[in-house]
Image (tube, helix red, strand yellow):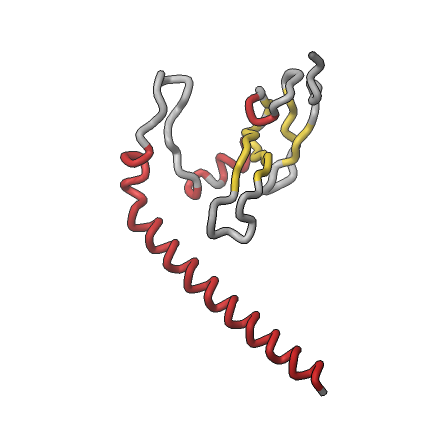
Length: 128
């Protein structure tokens, strides 16, 4: 069976466009070895305007280091034989997650209302 993606294939960092290179042939980009960053699959959950969409994204090592305070570290899969207990890992972030969720809902509602008002205005113009 031939691998679709060949060694040397490049994905650009989603933040700075730095190149992240594939280290070996593969069919599954999110389960391969990469030089200079992390490449993985993400999926949009219910509630996103991208509900159900899945993407392969890359973040280079430099951006991970620079943005580490905005990432939630959940463990090192090389050092453990089991998945981390995400409930325990996320517990210190609980209040921040709730506040950010409430803030996002408020911002989404403002955007919705602004869009609704704009649409109402455009409809009035069309009628004239």
